[in-house]
Length: 390
Image (cartoon, rainbow, N blue to C red; front, top):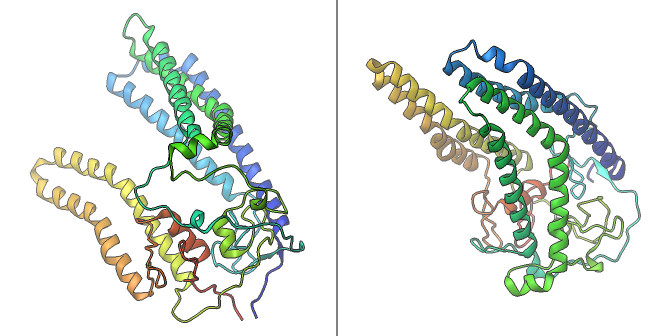
């Protein structure tokens, strides 16, 4: 018999929502203060300070200032996130920064930590089986709403660029300190806009895209045969929260992905010895994510090695060898370490029932379903042991 840890799903979601709201408010206040500081320094102090610097120091100073401001925003967001009073997993004591109500499991140890005390409400039905199947690779889907949203985003970005160009192009003489001061003021204005206005506009833009697609549903179906209707069917709504759940997740768990309510009777498959271990799969997912971060940092690292090779010309062979070694680490990571771990931990990313490839490079949606729910995206068969203690 599985051991259940009694967090109420509704209560846990409310606690997470409160903490996420607190993090967002603190980050927004810090962004406002940082943006106002950039504007004040750019208006009253930067030009007078920069006139005493050389041209290279002026250009490098404005670049370093902008990078430092962006870094401060990222660091403060991390600090604010880790310092909150987040609920903890009753089993591994890890802070729950996120929680999937349909799974009701800890994202760290995958133990079942929540249950729903609300009674079962019938009335939900799954879409057609074809709508649950993954799209063939390479198929593109377009809609009137997405096209209109792209045009609005392009117009907004073009407006911001033109305003910045106009503010920097009104100078009669090429006064570098004045130009860099205006750049710092413009950066502060962008920080204020992004923290206070752009986020709200982006949310409203997404709602506008959905509204346009609802109004143009028949036209979208004529334009693209692969387009899946966005008109909500009353039978597809959760009877608890009246939201549209993730149909694939509901088909696997029987729970709503929005509120966690039990809305569909699903017979849970038992664990078998041939299934993958959920903890080893979680560890592999983290290791593969480190490889992605290394690929992102590889480009500035290669540029740094190139600069060193230019400075120390007499030792070019050493720096070239180091650069090749630095570039070869991701290849060793992906084709040697991760492959050996897959063999050692018996992780197979091809469904033995339907043959569908579940790797992140083939289908990111299938990879997320495998790591989170432990099922195949196509045939919905269980491939990962739940890890519940008897």
